[in-house]
Every structure is written in structure tokens, then in C-alpha cells.
Image (cartoon, rainbow, N blue to C red):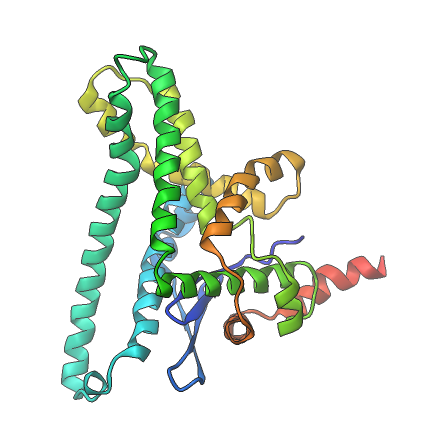
Length: 311
């Protein structure tokens, strides 16, 4: 497998694909037609320039940009499913709504980040604290805390996957992975080839989150403080460092078939069985159009696979 450096995410009844600074969103509209839009997004990484290319630092900016672009494209895809009364707005009303949506998006992202830090970083620490009378070793409790964190993450995925909308989103997530795997294995991007490809991919955001949880255990074992308050502060302060390291591990995994890297990738790939589902052909069609809007897969395959076959 050869990395194409294309990535994306599932949105409401569609898929966003991004390659370098270009991204596309393909959505299956209520009338059954596929709407494809294409744009550029530089984000924080584009504004900070060379700083965003420094290893272990670039991951922080890329993580922020993925959150912002993800929320933006998710909001865009949802706009196709508003009722007719909402669609019949004047230009002034539309501009007002866009401003409101921007502030709403910022508010949702802020609240989501605070909740994520609280649930996945702080709550496991307090839960592991109840074991102090039984487990005197700080290091053992830290490892237990890490496994509690992973357990909460898996339970969270299982709970949200019970809703029909999330199940369909996971199907589109599977279509996204299948398209990228199809390309990176040198196969023409057709519905048949995509259908036969794997829905698991080493560069998936699910794997990134697993690396975050795993690396947090290692760093918290190395950074030990006595004060309970400082332990909470350290868990929050280390998040950018953890994100930066996790990004580099994920990037290495996507560009290597090294047995050791593959071993570390296996838990994330296993969790992807929960966050991806087998898509139907109509979803695959949406994914293919999203890819082709921003990525010349034919050129990529000529450059990376035709030469290998000739050799």
C-alpha cells in the first residue's frame, strides 16, 4: 500500500474528501441526486506557515483544522435536509443565518472539546482514584486509568452507534475508507473495486484517537506530580503534546508496512469495526465523486503502480 495523502470524513448523507488545501463535499440530496462542491481550506496550519511543518508540532495544527473543517462541512451537508419553509429565505435572512451558524459552530466546538477533556481525561483520573485504598502504586493506577479511558471511549462509540443516523454515517465512513484503500492498492476507482476493498484504514481518525489514549498512558507514567490539582492540570496541559506525538505515529503508520507499526495499528483498526459499516452502492457512488473532485487517482496510480508493474 502506498499513501495517497488523501483523507476525509463522513458527513450527513455524504462524504468530505481533502487533498492538500483542496476539499470537496459530496451529498446525496433528498431527491436522490448527488451534489458536489469544491473549495480550498488553509486553516490554522496555512496561516502559521513553516511552523505547521515541524514534526510533533504540525499535528496540533492539523488536529484543530480537522475539527473546524469537519464541523463546517457537516453543517453544510445538513443544509440539504432543511424543510422548504427554511429554504425560502431572503438574502438578508440567509446572511444572518450564516453568521448565527458560525457562532453556533464555535460554541458547539468549544463545548464539545470541554466535554471531551472532562469525560476522557479528567473523569478516568477521578474514577481511578477510588482504587487508591486497594492499589497503592501511582504507576499501576495510571495504567488502570488509561484502560478506563479506553473503555469509556469504546462504550461511547457503542452507545451513539445505536441511532439510525449515526449508523448511516458510519456506512459513509466505511465508503470513504474503501475508496482510499482502493486507490492505494492500485485499483481503478469503480463501484465494484471499492466494494471489494477494506473498510479499515491505518490513517483513520479513530486510530488517531486510540493513539491519543495510548500515548497519554505512557506520558502520564513519565510525568509524575504529587498534588491532585496538578495532576489534573498536567492531564490537560499534555494534550497538545499527546496530539502532536499521535499525529506522527499515525502518519508513520499510513506510510509504512513495518511489522512493528502494523502491530501498534491493530487496536485502532479493530475499533474501526465499530465506527465503520459496510456501505451500499449508492454511498460508494457519493464517495467516488467526492474523491474525483479533488484528487487525480489515475495519475497517482500511473506514477506509483504502473512503474512497479513495468519493473
